[in-house]
Figure 1 (cartoon, rainbow over the protein chains, first blue to last red):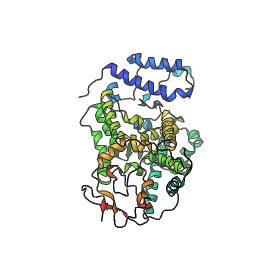
Figure 2 (figure 1 turned 90 degrees about the horizontal axis):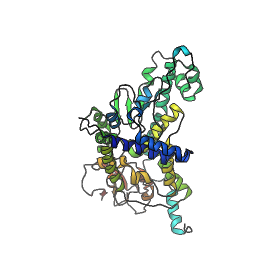
Figure 3 (figure 1 turned 30 degrees about the horizontal axis):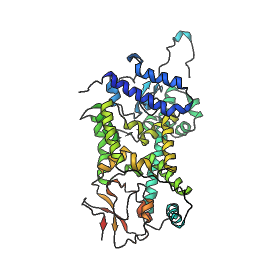
Figure 4 (figure 1 turned 30 degrees about the vertical axis):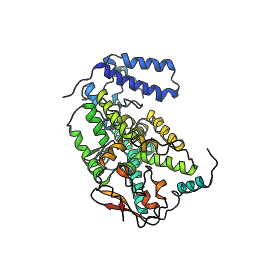
Amino acid sequence: MKRILPPSRRQFSAIAGAVSKFVALGTFGLSAKKLRSRLVWAAVAPPAQQPVRPPGALPEDAFRADCTRCYLCGEVCPVQCIRFPSRIVSSQPAIAIRAPIHPDQGEERPE
Amino acid sequence: MSAPGPISRAKKDLLRSRKRRLPGKMRWLQVLRRTIQFSVLALLFLIPTLSAYDNLRNQGDDAAIERNTGTKLVHSVVGGMDDHRSITQSVRGSVWTFKAGKVVVSDPLAGVDFAMASRTAWDPFFLTLLIPIFLTVLLGRVFCGWICPADLLFEFASKLRAIAGIETNIQFSRLTKYAILGIGAVAAFWLGTQVFAEVYPPRVLSGELYLWISFGLFGAGTWFLLAIVVFEVFVSERFWCRYVCPGGALYSLLGRYRLLRIKVKQSACTSCEKCQPVCEFGLDPMRGEMGQECNNCGLCLRACAPKALVYQISLPRKGLELLP
C-alpha cells in the first residue's frame, strides 16, 4: 500500500532539513561556504550517500514515513552505533559508519 | 514601557499572587500535578541512563560505569542482581512513545503524523494511541500540564515573567494552533516524513536529554527550546502552548466533550477575577468560558477564595460551565 515518493520530494525534505540546520546552527560558527556546500549536497547527493538506516529497517522512503523518532532503537543498540543527527529537522536514526579496520592491523578502535 | 501606575501595580500583585500560598482549595492537587510532572522528567533522565548502563555492562566496561554518576547510581542498585536486565529494560522510550514492560503508549500526535506520512489507514502502531485518546476524551487536555515535560519548562518561564514583572504580552489568535495542526498534517502527507516529531517540544526535550546523556552532546533542539523560553519570558506569555502547539490543538479537539469539567457556581462568585491571571492557557474561568482548551490543572480552583470554582463530572451539555 505504500507509495514511493518521487525523488524530487525526497530531495525537498532533505533540503528542508539542511535549511533548518542552516538556520539553527548558523550561530555555531560554521562558515557560510561550508553551510552552502552542505545545502547543495543535500539536493544533489546520490542515493548511495543517503544515510544507512538501522538493521532490518524498511526501504528508505517507507522508513522516512514510518519512523516516529522515538529513539527506542538507539536505546537498545548495544554498541551505540545508531546515532541521531542533532538537528531539528530529519533527526531520524542512522548508523554511524566508521572506516573498516582489519583485525590483523591491530589498530585501536577510535573512540 | 510606561511607568507603573496603580492599575499595573494591581496587576503585578495579581501575577505575584501565584507565588504566595493561595486561599483556595485543593492544594494537594497541585502537589500531585507537580509530583507527576517531575516524575516524568526524572524518567526522561533515568531511561537513557539505564540504556547507557546496559550498553556499558554488555561491553564489560566497568571503569566507564564508575566514571558516570548516573550509571554508577544504577549500578549500586541493580549491580548485584542476577538478572539486572529485567529492571533496566522494563522502561524505554520517552513521552513520544513510552514502553513499560509489554505496554506501549504513544502520543496521539505521533499517530496523526504516522497516518499522514505513511499514508496508511491502519497500522498496529495505532493501538498504542488508545490509552491516551481514551484519557483525553474523558479528562480533556490533561497531557498538557500533567505530563508534558516542556510544560514544566514553559510554566517556569511564565513564573520568571511574574517575578520579573514583565508586562509585554503580545496575544495571537488561539485558532493558530489548529491551523498549524492542519498545515503540519498536510505537510507530512506531502513530504512523506513526519513533521510534528521535529518541532513538538516534549519530543524535542526528551530527544535532547537522550542525546545529552547517551552521547554528551546538545542538538539544535536545545536552542529551539531556549528560543521559545526567551520569547515567552519577554514577548508573549505561554506563546507555544496557547497559540502554536499542534499537540495542544489535537488534545483540545479530542477533549472537547470531556466528562471532567471545571464549573463556576455563580451564587458564590464575587467577580474578583483572581482566577483569570493564574490560568496558564489564558482562558476565562470566571465566566465559565474555558471551552475545549482547559487542561483541568486546577490552578484557578486554588486561586478562588470563595470556592466558586468546582470540578464536576457531567455529560457534555451546551453552555453549562455555569452553575447556579
